[in-house]
Each structure stands twice: as structure tokens, then as C-alpha cells.
Length: 533
Image 1 (cartoon, helix red, strand yellow):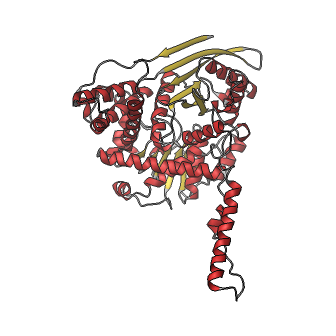
Image 2 (tube, rainbow, N blue to C red):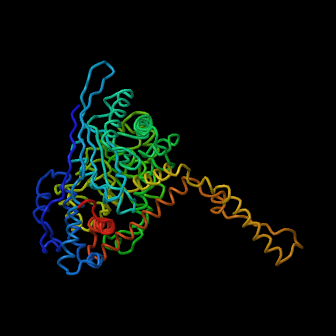
Image 3 (cartoon, helix red, strand yellow):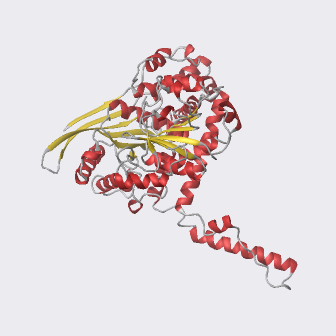
């Protein structure tokens, strides 16, 4: 087995005062925008550079009072930003797996930990043939900023195994997953207080259950919190209700907030609400499916779906449930009878909302100007390059960025982790008490009315409203999770909007989101300091 473990050190040297301008780090911006296929990590760095230059002046009032001069304060801020940028650890592993036919195959896998400013680290595990060091480091860094935006106290991480899971049997996938779990655990890249992975592309509840079992039966055998080493598990293994649909549901809440904001709707000339809005989704996996469901329930119309092997179009609308059932039965969307297969590039087709939920770098400088959707709701990580982002903003397109839009998954993963370390389901301790309290409340109202008006005409009946009747039994775990997710997305959206207004960013919500994240991360480093530095 080949093992490589790298430590990335912060860059040395101060940034110039010119970096306080919006045009910060022009060389990095130009390098990232010029190539047709820029490195994923350089894309993230571009956004971080842009935001960090904007927040300096605002952070001057938050520097420790022991630092006196403005020059020293700026250097302190820039020093923390230099600490934030690099990936702290990158684990590269090659390990063998025995195939069902007895042959041996050597696989390549990675786990990146971007930041430990909050612990444990958090980020998904994907199985995909395109996995490489650049991808996992970029995704790990995005997780750091994503967690900060939604106030989830984790550092960012990401993992990937370089395989196409469709080419392996269930038994082979189990052997791969358990071996990878052991390799991560041995190198302290897995554990409830160290590093907590989750599902991602090509993985799901099944793989997470295998990892939890492997860890609890090996290095975590004496740890009562062992099953908190990973999230996205089945309910029977400590999972939480609402986790499977969390990313799609969070995207719906993110979109809902901006679809009801007069300022942004006036900028893009769109009417409020979901009713009769048309949308196109790229990628009909877990994220794409659930965002389709929630938008459809609110009255929006799915008119196009883009998959690797087929694109479907239907101006009258496609029902997500029918599409899901067809895919489960046939394993593909090809041949779906309720829509027309098309060779048209649906990314640039006419619609109100475009949902890229497939892979990174789908919207580039080559197609951004052609996009007709007025809102781009990013379900995938990194679907838009910096050059394309600039074009979309110039064309008055509202991009709801990935680091906020798809943060529902990590938010509910946080809830699952809390459930695992507290060893009790949300709502269990209060469920019966709340139900009885609500009935006592109704009885108290009835008694008060009868005491005031008498009972000459018989008892005064008190009937709960339809909505109260639904809640009278108290909040279930799913109710609590959904409520917490909605609150988190709403609060985060408000903070992003406040940054956009503070820095006069207009429609540039991505920079506003990174500003929000970096401000919070700076405060964490300011208060905690640096260990052994």
C-alpha cells in the first residue's frame, strides 16, 4: 500500500494595501478566468481572494484591542486570511481490492482536511472516476466556507475514491468502503471528534452504514460515540429523519427567500413566488430529484431535465414523481414517455430558474452569455467558473451560490451528529408532554368561556383549527429537523443579503456569501488564537 500525507503550510509574506480593493489579486483572477478548464481549487481561491480583500476595512473594528495601529491591524487580518486559505492535510491512499472473479485491483483514494478552526472536520465521500487531489482539496475548502455560512461548527473536508461504482458488485463496493474506512481511521481521518464524513456522489446510506460499522468494530470499539463518526446513515444505525432530502429541501428554502425579496426580483425583473415559474434541472440524482419535488409542490413547472445520456423537454411540465418511478424501474430516463427527448442544449433554454445539480464547471465563459434563466440555483459544487459568474452578473442574472444553496445537507448532518453524541432522538423527551399540554390548553379555554357565559345552552365546544390539529401531538424528529433547516437557511440568507448591501455588491451573492463566511472564520481565529505558533 502506498500512503502519502501532506501538510500545507500558510504562505509567507504580507499582502499589499492595494489588495483592499475589489480587484484584489488580479493575477489569480486572470489565471483562473483565462483557461477553458481552470483548476477547481484555483476557482475557490479566486472567490476567497475577492471576498477577503473586501472585508478588511470592516474587520478593523474587530481586531484585538492590544493591536494599536491600522497597519498592524491590517497585517493581523491578512495573516489570518493566509492561515485560512491552504488545505491543512491531504491524505492519498492506494489499496488493493479483490474482485468477485478473484482478480486484484489497486484503487486510488483521497481525504482532504481543509481547516481545523472548528472540529471535527466535515465533508462527503464520493465514488467517481474523475476524483483527484485538486477536486477533493477544492471541495474540502468549499465545505469550510459553507459550514461557516450556516453556522455549523465544523471545519471543511472531502474524500473520494477513484471508481465508477456502477462497475462493481455490492460485495466489491462493501470491501472497498470498509478498507477505505480503515485506512482513514488509522491515519486519524475518521472519528466522531476528528473527521466526520457523509454521503456524496456515488455513495449513500448503505456506504455510510458500512463505515459506521467498520469504525465501531475496530478503532472505535470502546467509544460510546462511535456511530457519530459519520452521518447520512440509515435510521436504524443512528441516522436522522429528513437527511436524504435535506440538500434539496435546503435549496428550496434558499430560493424561496430570494423569490420573495422585492429588491432582487426588481433587479432581475421577475414576479414573486413559485406559481407558474418554469425550471430546468441538470442532474436527476438525489439533489435534483428532491429540489424538483419541492419546487413542483409550490406550483413551479419542470420543463426540462438534463442527464448524461439524455435530455428531456416538456413545455407543459414533467411530474417529478413519474420521472422518479420511471428511473427506478429502468435505470435511466431514456424512453420516458411523458416528455420529448431532445438534442437542444437545455442549459441555455428559456426558463425562469436553472438548477445545475450535476458536476463542477458546467457554466463557463463560453455558454454563460447564452443562459436565459433569470435565477441560477446551484445544487452542484462549483458548477460556475469565475469568468462565467462575472458574465451572469453583468447580464442581471441572480446566482444563488453553491456554498449557501446546497448547505442543507451539512446542516442536517450536523443535527444527526448532535443526535448521535446525545444518544436520544429529537422530540422524544417532550413528545407526550407537549401533546397533553395542548389538550389541557384547549380544555382551559373551554372552561374559561363556560365560566364567563355559563352552560345554560350546554357545553361550549372548542375545536382546534386544521393546522393546530396537525401539531397538537407535538413535534416529531422530522418536524424539528425541517424547522431547524428552514430557520438556518433563512438566517443565513439574511446575513448574506446584509453583506451584499454593506459592500454594495448588487447581484453578486457569491462574493457576499464568501464575505459572510470569512468574517465568521476570522472571529473564530481571533478569539481562539493559533496553537504553538
